[in-house]
Length: 236
Image (cartoon, rainbow, N blue to C red):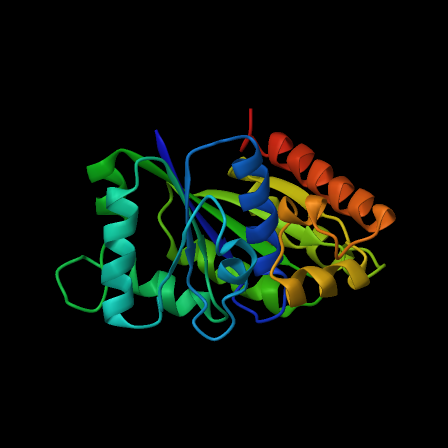
């Protein structure tokens, strides 16, 4: 069954694109058939990291009706799984994709999933603040019951996720069988090199822009995320 992955978080700067880049790197390294979509028109970080590689990245402004029509075509026509990196305020996009499908301003994700025999998975990225947890709760109410949920805790700060761990939202996720996985912190100096040079966790390993130690940290981040994807059932 084809899988459609939305990398979500609603709040800007929560780490959505970092999750998208790591997930893309793991799946490409495993030679898994995946179509990449960068839906962030203002900060297309996924496209910047993988442009010129073996896999093209579709740059689509999913905030517009024309862009959502283009997204429909990519999802429907992709021979394998599809990974979409949503922009900030991604809930505005998912609301347009959860309509009856008759209007010109969106389409029905449930209808599309049934038509192409696909499964919808939301990887919702949170940090230690309240706003992404609130957005997560609202999206759980709004999206179809058949949606598969995976919460990604971004450990960019050295403090616990007590705020999330004690919420009814987490209890509701557990009742739905959702997975909670962790995004470990990558050395900020390495991240800066990757972003400035347009590298990803695969291409960085052979780049002369990183030292041996920095390349080892890249490999560690890739290995860690691969393990987390296995925990979530995303990778065999």
